[in-house]
Image (cartoon, rainbow, N blue to C red):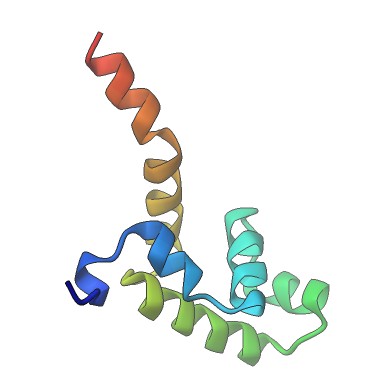
Length: 86
């Protein structure tokens, strides 16, 4: 079966991110704005925006809020499922 974006797991989508895109993702998940991310990673704010666009495209999401939601859903879904099935 050919893997397309629509049937990739989150892990497979995250594996498509570059090292720098992963660094930007972690900074977003820390709640940092683009300017702070740029300063901490020694890149321009425009480059941060470019990386964000790539991250959103590769993960098939639209914005930071979606990134946070996907992250926390993935993180807590097993625990919630286990709790609901008790």
